Image (cartoon, rainbow, N blue to C red; front, side, top):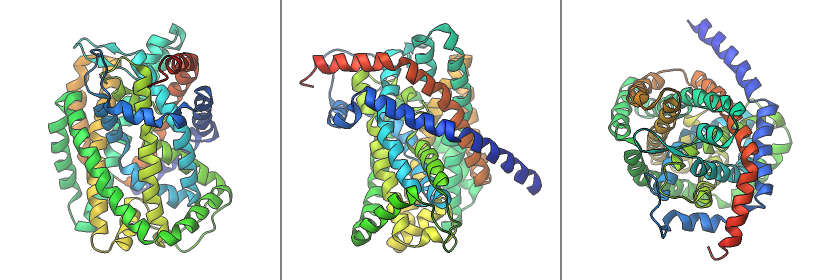
Length: 452
């Protein structure tokens, strides 16, 4: 059995290496750079408008199911997950400190990508047979591009439907089970079953239930984790310039093997920095526009501006805090990986309570990601098979949670990586093909709303 798992891991490693090879990573970065320049730096210079749009009500009655704030919280609930705890630790473990620099680069240009995705989600959304608004890459491919590109919509929906069970489900429950079993001796299967029951109570209420839960859970969980991390950082503030230089230097020079750290090449720093950055903020995957399509607004620019806040909050804030806490001490040199590494680092910086902050953060982050991604996967399945599949998908979603909690971590991460890459490709193609509409409409909006 162990030989079979090892053989499967080797095969998946090869596939992951191909899918997350130079072509995909270059595409993700180049598309983000292209959109940033095409929008003339809109994502850098209009962050204030994005924050203001969160709470600004339209003068007219807008269509949609949930508020812009709830749509952002739903999207953040799916992105602020174990990628911020376990994903950052894995990036450092595999790519060295330099991986964090490439996570930052991915996030900076990912803001324009996020803007474009949510913009198109509102512009090309449609109503399903139940009268609810649905959208995302499959819809802006179908409604925005000519028929010869429609196969990309089905390609995205298929891989999105499957990817959800990895990135948004089993990876999350697995990371929670790993930490709680190691730190508190809890049974992994019990952990998985408890999470499954709690998730079921939320997701069977649909997007409004998910949005309400996310709008309360996301700010609470983020505040607890951020305050704990900032306390450790400010306690060791004299080390921060040195750590910043270590991150930047390691991004362009190989990191030597030290202690339990095996060393990392420049390519490994780029590969794992970008892939874990995408895993964390999902810019380019095409997942979050599925949530933004349900927002109560008819203004694509407004919702796009709200969406571009995600990489700022998720990667440039939360992931950076995790990275600095890990690099402040010597825990990253011990050879420990994943959430266990972050737990050790927090416990070193905040003895006794550090591990509880990570455990609570991990549980809340993972729970919110599971409910957010359940909606993404469900809408992909609905696009392929119709609205009648929703309840079946939700049932399968709940069943997979305890299975993920008791499965080998490396295998799950590999599957999640592969699925992420496959769903990103059709979305990136659509973003480029539809970019002239994004640029033109945004330019006109800025010209006509200078006092926004």
